[in-house]
Image (cartoon, rainbow, N blue to C red; front, side):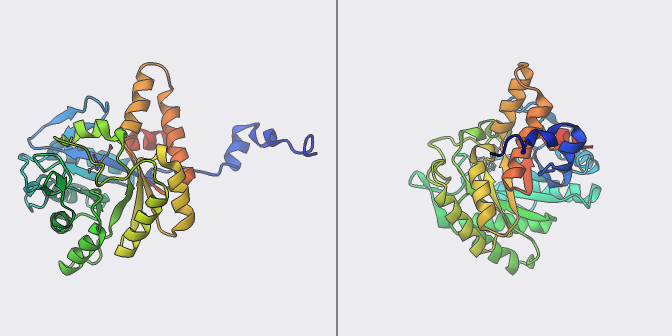
Length: 323
Ligand code: PBG
């Protein structure tokens, strides 16, 4: 009989004992903050569904990045709101596009801040889908060319790493080949490998103005019911040359983060998406949850599951709290 010999409460008695036996520690350097860059000057427009997050013009973005860097946050991931959208997502792979210009501006002011770029087309197409639409659906292979061109133009502008989020088959390989051919063999790929067709992206679509104008993304993003298929997506992306793999969203998919951690000896990232953020902030604003504790517990759970890198809209407040 373990009791009364074994008393697990002994090591919970004081904060010093709890600290000594704590298994999971968060640090600001593991967070990546998503940022939204828009045209104009002096623009700092709060996103209604994501309080505390803004659409920023390049001048404001540069200031934000300096702030982020000084807090010790690991890096930023950029999303662009182009001036014009069209059928061909031209703004996505334009060397003078909004994200490309933003990268150059950040590089000048905070050269040591890690800058990752989201590689996708949904913010740039007039219909809001993640690729070239043919016969009412996204054409996989035609889209690969746009993605490869976008990734190369981001690298050329000075991005440290590119992160494809489109979920086309074969896109990691296509991007790897294009980067290598363009002289960017050293630019790593963070692949949104297991990305689900999730309702929790709702607030983001307001932030990035990227809601599909017809249908949904279920013909390319994963079915939330499928865990084994997620492992297959990850394995394929690694074969194609992904350097870091990501599970997205995070909290509803902790089982898959843990499963991936056991199976693959590569760095694993998780994206705590807009809806996960907004739920906590909304509950806190109603006085139903303590904001800081809910934030830290959610981040801790993601790290405990096995994600060493966390993309999160809480990056700044969490870094401040971790001091
Ligand atoms: C672009 C993209 C999306 C997100 C990241 N990259 C939206 C989507 O797939 O609809 C969602 C991020 C979030 O909700 O915070 N494809």
